[in-house]
Length: 255
Ligand SMILES: Nc1ncnc2c1ncn2[C@@H]1O[C@H](COP(=O)(O)OP(=O)(O)OP(=O)(O)O)[C@@H](O)[C@H]1O
Image 1: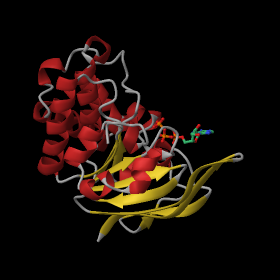
Image 2 (image 1 turned 180 degrees about the horizontal axis):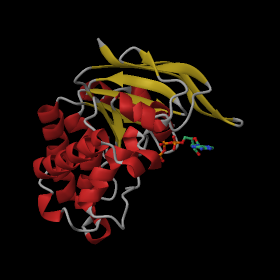
Image 3 (image 1 turned 180 degrees about the vertical axis):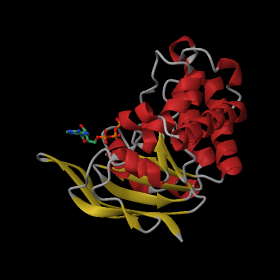
């Protein structure tokens, strides 16, 4: 059964068509890549899938449920978590609080819940803290739990951002350019980390990445878009030798 099914997705921003009739089917457990030149519409697709934008046309089915009209935290509640191209951590909160608070945020807790501190609320607070400890431990971040993210090296900040998404116990993890800004040894660590997360948590992963090394070594299925439309899809081997891909990336020696 497919976990994520995207059908005829189109997104217009005024006169600009950022995504055109995009289709995708991701089965449970997939580790899939989305690549394409700058401005091709990749992040727009993630913004649509995570509920930040509502599509102009088409539909997104997650576990057969149409996500149209859902707010981002409701989409997260269904089991879709994401990271961002530019790391978005709360820099004045500790690493532990970043991972803990993300769960409140995603579950849509409000001031009333917090003020009345019902037993159910206190219990879920405990559960959330426990989950934060567990995930930091699993991702070798416990030593940094009380640090502020801004004081950590960039590679660790990335790791914290992924930990924060994983604390939501997602069925689908969207990674938007996780290797952006990392040095080559951090990139190696990241490849190991994503592979480990995929195997350990049995989470389906859909990732955008410009670094071909990352995509080609991790993803078993890759879709290539240009000007918002799919120009190729297949295995890393098929993508590498696809003439349309080579043309779109002409001059890019990374392919
Ligand atoms: N909120 C918005 N309003 C207007 N135009 C937008 C908006 N978001 C994206 N765009 C435009 O849509 C197109 C696709 O942008 P998008 O960020 O999805 O591309 P991308 O493939 O993620 O690019 P990159 O690899 O550079 O991150 C671009 O032309 C961009 O300027």
